[in-house]
Length: 335
Image (cartoon, rainbow, N blue to C red; front, side, top):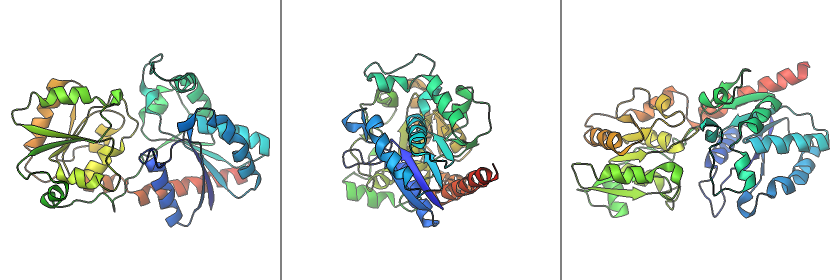
């Protein structure tokens, strides 16, 4: 089995977290024996990369060294279809939509974004991409519904690396990070400067707590150190306005640390009834109340068990996609 991944999300030296789930996913596929090639459109130097990447993608397709194509964004589907037309490539296309902005009301956009970025907030281009694919997967059940997509699709959230994110001794992790044992620590893993992540709400909620609390923010925590920070925390918090299938929720569950989150994307479904995981409204009052509950949680947390029940390890997710690739190839051969 040979798979060509087409994506605009993939880690770089300057953005080590960007699309980390794509990199980890393709690595898990390789462990299953899939030959993986990645066509990454790096837009950090300009949106024109979406156009300039197409000739290289066409050359890659012309070599016929892939059986199936897996696109990870609306723009990636556009690129794929154009390059296929130019190279006369006939490989079936699997499209996974990770685009949480699909859940925003029509017309909502980031006023600081450039014109091409603003297109991604429109729903019609996303509908076209969904209908252009041979097989559709969404990372949560809400995105296709928000786009009015009525054809069959699968729901598969990205998997989490259960070998990297493992429960560790809190005291050891705090000693490594220089955090006093007696401090109450809340970890906000996201970049506090991202307005969609809601750090302003988190700060206001912390002011309402009955105990003195230290908040640690992400943005410059390395991938390797994030499990240490999570294990050192008393609670992980997320206050996003919109998400698709946030990795930080699954990562906190993987290390069995309590978490409070808004019900953004699929968080509510992922949390389920697992002890130690709480959904809050996106306001300081309710977030503070849920943080108090989480900080007072004395029983076991069962986040890791919940992830395994849901089949959300990297290996389990890769196996699901391998079955999909085989199915689309079977359908393609039958036509």
